[in-house]
Structures are given as C-alpha cells and as structure tokens.
Figure 1 (spheres, helix red, strand yellow):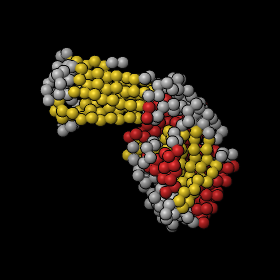
Figure 2 (cartoon, one colour):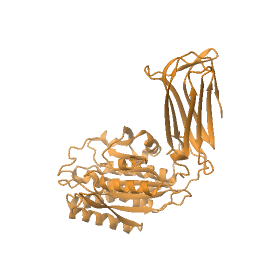
Figure 3 (cartoon, one colour):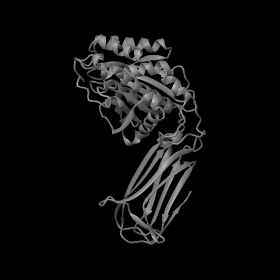
Figure 4 (cartoon, helix red, strand yellow):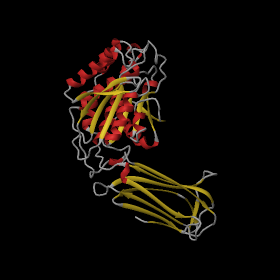
Length: 415
C-alpha cells in the first residue's frame, strides 16, 4: 500500500476504495479476537507488577513473535513501580521516516479480569499486527501494548518521553481502550473518537473510512473532545498527535469483577477492528515528508495607521522536500461581540472570514490593504490544516488588536 506525495488524492468523502484495505478487512476474524480476549481474561486480574501480568505479557509476546515481526520488551520504572511495554515494529518502505503507533494497555485493575478494559484493545492490536504484516506501507507501524495504564499511564508516559528525546518522527498515535461493549443496536452502531484540535485530522480520516467502507464497518464515528485517561495522552503531552477509540455505550461492568467476555459484544469489537485497520492503513499509506515544524505563520498588521494594513505569510520551510497541501482559514472577529469584523468592498459588505485551499511551495502571502473595517477590539486567527497527503499538518496563530477608525481600504490577496 504505497503512495507518493505527488500523486492525486481524492478529496474528503470521495476517496476511491482501496482493494488492499478491503482485502485486509476481509481477513479480520471474530473468532481470533474472541480467543485473545478469552485467553487474557482466563488469566484473571492482572495488575501491573503482578505475576498474572507477566503471563499476559508472555502470551502477547509469543503471539507477535509467531507472525515474525521484530518484538521487544521495553522496560520502564518509576520510584514506586516498574513494568514493561511490548513493542512490535512493521518497518515502512517510504522515503520518509514517519512512525504510526497503534496501541492498547494490557494491564487491568486489581479486581477485574479486564475483558473490555482492555483485552478488547489488545485483541485488535494483535489482529492488526497479524494482518498488516503481510503488506507494505510508507510509514513504519509500531504496535505497542502498554503496562501501568491503570496506575497513571506510566508505561506510555515513559515511552512517549523517550520518543521525544530521541526525536522520533511520530505522525500519529491511535489508542484502543474499552472497545468491546455494546448492549443495544444503537450502541453497536457508534464509536467515539477522542482528539484535541491538533489531532483532529485523524478523526477526519476515521470518519472518512467509516463512510467509504460502510458495508464492511457499519459504524458512525462520533467526534468528541480529548479523553485525558488513555495512553495516547502521554504522546499528546510530548507534542505528538494522539487520539483514541472508545465504546459509545456506558459499560455497567467497567472496573468490576464482571468485566468478562460474557458481557462483551464480539460483533461490535469486530467493527471497531475493521475501522481501526482502515484508519491506520490510510495514515501509514501517506508519505509524511513534512512536519508541523516546517510550517511557519507570520502576521503583521497596523490597525491604527491609515490605511490599515494586514499581512499574513505562511512559509513551508521544507519546500525542497515537498509542497504543503493545506486549507487556510483567516478569521478577524470582535472579541466582545464574537462576530466577524465587517469590511466594505466597493458597494457591499464582506465578513473578515477568508478560506482558501492551496498547495504551498515555499510561501503563500495574503494582504488586506485598504478595507473599511468596523472598529472595536478584535482577534485575528490563522489556522493552517493539512489536506490530502498532508492531513497530519496543523498550525494555528492568534493575535489581538484594536480598530479605532473606519478606514477605507481594499482587499488584495497575493498568490
């Protein structure tokens, strides 16, 4: 599943279906997912630091080794606790060094066998590793099972900090946490995708995958704000993009001794597995030549002068490697009234809310030189969001000012 940065990508919601993704989805086996959950559950409660967790770790390690991926125990420790993560790597074959992480935690709380929380996520990661290991992707895909999540995300926190220190080019992280419970048809038709604004492009992709492969997935993706309790947040705290999938339903057996396979919905778990497979495959199929550090927003403006001037420059510092496919939103709003500043162009009013889609080579410039601005305290926001093969790019800059006079100006965008 390789793509190049120069190829034409279908716009959102009209992406052509990939025979490889359909082929991979058709290999998802509900019985295998069930077996993974059953095996982990039967070991019993497996708190970090327990002998039971060592048995779960050995099972996961052996499963990953059997599909001939490079696997390692990644050890971590704090002043109070120590443990190990299990890391398997599917090396990418693109020209960039991007890494996509799909992960779950394999520990449970002290009293729970942890079927939904989080043998469900572990089962999906193991199934994805087995299937995706047969294919080629641009980015490296790292399959990680973390310990120490229930005590405070210790395993993922240590790993994310090390990744930051090492300068790892992590494109995105998708965690699977509690993805196996649904008690009604409505609950079984939805999945929650948590993210912050910087990582929202991952929700765009999962939503698009749910629509494109609806007959194979059968889920609606709900876009919810960030969940602070799952392992992906450890990466967000280090400046990486991170999101998670979580069941839509409220599980009454959560963190109890009755969190067992008996109360899970394997059909729902399979749907989430299909969606995860399509999402990770699409992200890893991108070729991330650029990072957010390559995008730079410069804002200059003199609201108190005559005429008023507003200048925005967006630079692509990595232009020698790749162009930046982005959508650009420029919004000038009154702070107190929360309304767009109004300008006059010839004989009609225009809201100061401009949007454009561009493929930026080295730079893109935008001038507002000679409008009639409505006066007042204002905020100027510039948001650059990647699209197509650069969907992971995101930059935002905000500045504040005061418009005292009505100033006669004209709009002049420069390309």
